[in-house]
Image 1 (cartoon, helix red, strand yellow):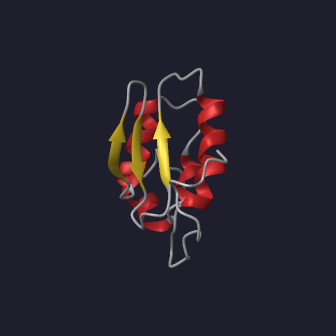
Image 2 (spheres, rainbow, N blue to C red):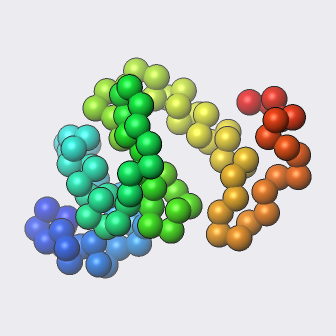
Length: 103
């Protein structure tokens, strides 16, 4: 079953990140936003080029943009900053974010 065939049934069968399997390179940014919103992802921010959506559980975020020449750098920033947040009961780092200048 694909998202385009039956979006509501697809949404009911997938997990928070499993929905990404419904995303293909041929989709537009608007299509991707629709796919994520259909399974409960909510708006959490916007910038010049992009919007941010968070998953229903609040542990993951998606940055959706029609075009962004800086996306490889943004992805690197997200990977490197991942350790600064807490999710699913994990313990945040013991050092304060203000003192952490390693990024």
